[in-house]
View 1 (cartoon, helix red, strand yellow):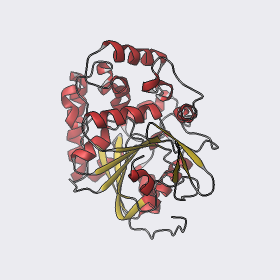
View 2: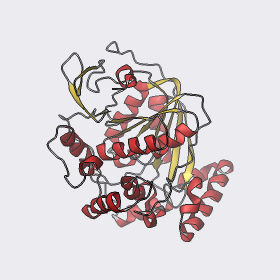
View 3: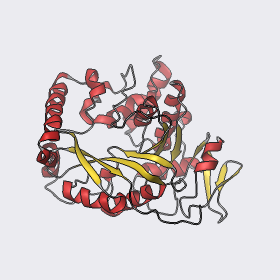
View 4: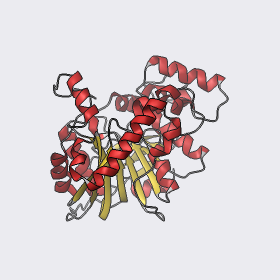
Length: 351
């Protein structure tokens, strides 16, 4: 196993250092975590999961759930339909494209309707624009990285990127893409609520279109653990949808404004986000990330259908206007919360 993992991973239960024992990582309290094809599976198998793919990842790591159609692709933990899995299998055996077959189907989740017409037809990887300055080796963690698009964007900006996601299938796809592109990104199967990284491990922590699926108490667990692993004066950059965005209002109306269930999206007001993030990190700035949708990235403009391009242009106009007319951020569908960590660090003698 890469020494980086032994130097930077800790037990997500008690934050103790880990030792490598065969295909396991073990802490001195006896907690064990499987390693599958050099990917650590750092999920807690004795706690309720927020996503069913996490349960499938645990079972695959233990060898009790294997999709025999294509074991090397880890289909059981991808969280897509059976039709999609069959499409991946077909693409992997009949298509000569250089694009990873799993990514060809996972891409729809990256931007909703933006990429749905490209499912199974990708000819390049849609890498987004990371709203952080160029770096010279600063560490970067993406929580909920899926197939690794933001990690790749960070590496292209000069960061040393690490991706964490509860889906073993998505992480394996991310690893394959990283190797294909000649990048040295590290990937871990992990739960954002119980991050398996040592204290003060990262200069930057990022998450996009992930925390919106969690109950508020679970979001607080994620933010608390980010504050633990973030270096003093490190940057947290998190994207979340807002309660008063036009498209967000439409989706809330469709479910009759009832409380979100299971993996449904939760919507936040800008003031509540400011209070929440300030509690964990200190002063936090909220800016508009997009209007009329989530995931519309300038770098992927050429991939968008004509109607989506029009929506994107309108969104960009409003984003620029929001820099001058601050109240416009309250009706953005998607916002970034950027925090410079300035709270006193908690002492943790276990690490």
